[in-house]
Length: 291
Image 1: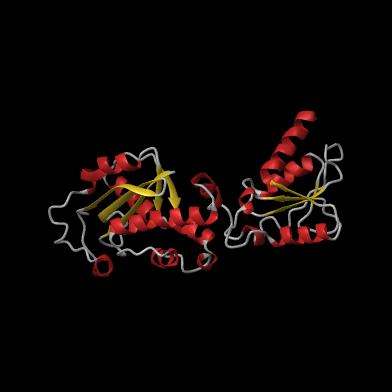
Image 2: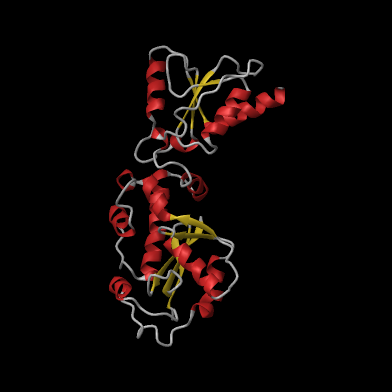
């Protein structure tokens, strides 16, 4: 597991007016390298921004300009994963690159705020600012210093990985899904009739949790192999497909309401098979091979 966390401070409302950059490189959860520099934004300093980070025009006198540090920035970020808390820093870097007509840096971005909203239930809809999340994980830092904030962003991701057991690859998928997949309305009304010629005709399937593929696509696949797709678990349900991530705890809930209802019905003697999404995909693959 290797990534670089970044944070920038700006001189004014123009997001290209970067006046400080901080970078923190983590490998296997350990800080292995760091770099920080004041930047001359070649722009004015707004008192509102100065009140936040304390950096003034006098502080950056003689400091390098963004193009002067671009090579070092590219060295840290190119070909890897870059973590920032909200997209502010990503946009700022992009704006500064455009401002000076520099080449785009080839890096993959991950928003640690989106991670926090899915890892800690109390941060789902509010309180996911960097300072508050760090209080939750017990990490102390000096807020609004670019290097300190970069390190903190990295610590949020590391804490989320430890809490949930989900690795970086899984988190990239998770942040693109609803905050609470089990209550998402995106799949609640999805219904399909099963293909009568399908290998699993007669099965009544329900999907729950954070699926890797969109619910509509999953429903289409199930229908193609004969399954009738229903929006909720009932006594008629024969198959419940659960997102692989939901095997570990998400937002403090190890099982969705559909999952719990299915288990309740099974305990009463109803025959409901509960499988992971990856196993469902294999069922579809095997059925298509037979066909």
